[in-house]
Length: 266
Image 1 (cartoon, helix red, strand yellow):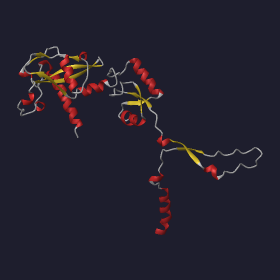
Image 2 (tube, one colour; image 1 turned 180 degrees about the vertical axis):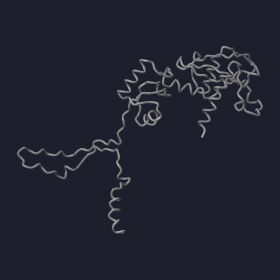
Image 3 (cartoon, one colour; image 1 turned 60 degrees about the vertical axis):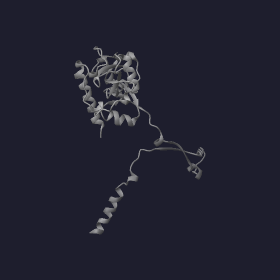
Image 4 (tube, one colour; image 1 turned 45 degrees about the vertical axis):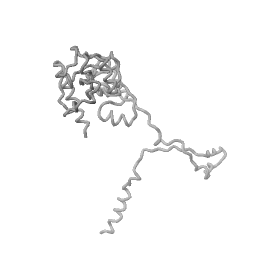
């Protein structure tokens, strides 16, 4: 019985392909180092190949060749890439895993190009539009934190755009004073009740797109290093809105920041 099964088992093992025998999409293009002589018309038989005719040189290795970018059509706004129905050129690997698989884009085929023109002319499902591909990314980054606005504890002041510009510059954000839109209600001090309270203002990105940025007032002075340390740091205290009309907006922005931090934490 076992002897009769041996031929069957051998045939099954031969049909199984090992890992080394699996198909691989690699192509190597070679060329002869010594060209083959042409056969003359008067020759009865073709000229035989010599040993030198089997010497080859690498002409191209497709495995090491950089793949060209492909054109895809965005089906929604993608941060850092473009708006809906924009045509962008990206590497194939990035397009497949980051745009096509999640459903953020489709191939730039002739049928999809016609569909794109139809939607653009009819203005169907245009989606959000930004002044540049990086405008939405800039807005999202600026809305993810609360910036400190250091104001004098003893000298009277009124918050002006240049105060905000200097405070943002110390945090690594460089912008012009014309891009800062303060609340309609003027914020004046020094008032101890305003210390560590938060208010919202608008930052214009490229002069068009608005970002809601939270600023926290910190009353300070020249010899602040000699002040006794607080029991609870100001950034761990509950966030309070400075202006009553902005209380709902501040709570929404803080909740969005906390949700984003929860997603980012492992």
